[in-house]
Image (cartoon, rainbow, N blue to C red; front, top):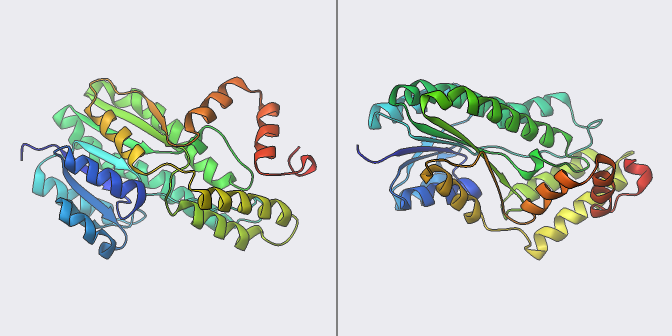
Length: 279
């Protein structure tokens, strides 16, 4: 009961799994949640408590209640569950765009609402929102993904000021290229949605760049994100945001230094897009 308690969503693989293990190693009682409970089995060997949770339904309330009933507190919420669905804005059905907002924005908002009364009562707590470097910069055919991450960044900034008087901190983690399932899911969906029609040439270019990056293993390990989370929650004065992983800091610097037009041209070249396709 004296151990701090952490709740991590999307804990079945990648960043969520690495973060759950890291915080457990740091002495936290960790609850890891995911839609498929069987994918959390490996975490139990590290003392992590698995919970089945779809972040788009009311099971969130039941998960919160179980943690409070068993531990009496929640010290850290890591909103990690999310996904990226790529395709041209013209091609992606609106219901898919809404689904992406449900998982990437509305779910973190609802989970935050559920834990805040308890954190306010204990006058402490940290909410960690796993965003993306895609919440700072952008790329072609990722409009819905970028929209959700830009929204999550703005929500976090406003929330940080709201809850500071109660001793609650809000931190944004902005991973760059990380070796997870995200790349495969994004590029496969891209070709299904925009692999034919007016955006087919650009879709193939983006798909090839993502494939080559994945094959080259240029992404960082999910452990770099877990390290950033552990650093943030242990700090008395954590930074508002941590850009970590391959190319993350370079992307932030580029966004700060380049004009919009210059950044457009730089991004177009990186995805082998012809000028008439993007400008």
